[in-house]
Length: 101
Image (spheres, rainbow, N blue to C red):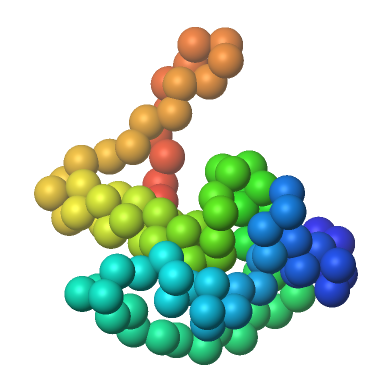
């Protein structure tokens, strides 16, 4: 995967990939005070975040991460219930997809 350039971090579709505190604060209501975290990403992980943001048309990095956490939580809950995930290939074949080892 290619390295992310500074220009890419500055904006996707006109909105900055690197959020300022003021940007994030403006999105939160007065009643919802967010927990702030600093997250160090490798160049590869930063590129994946950028790709996911573009593919999902997310407006912020936080939106991508919140959606990923919700999905990850839901998948873990299903696995804990003993359910499995199936993939239906374009040729019609159905195979089990192992998410967690």
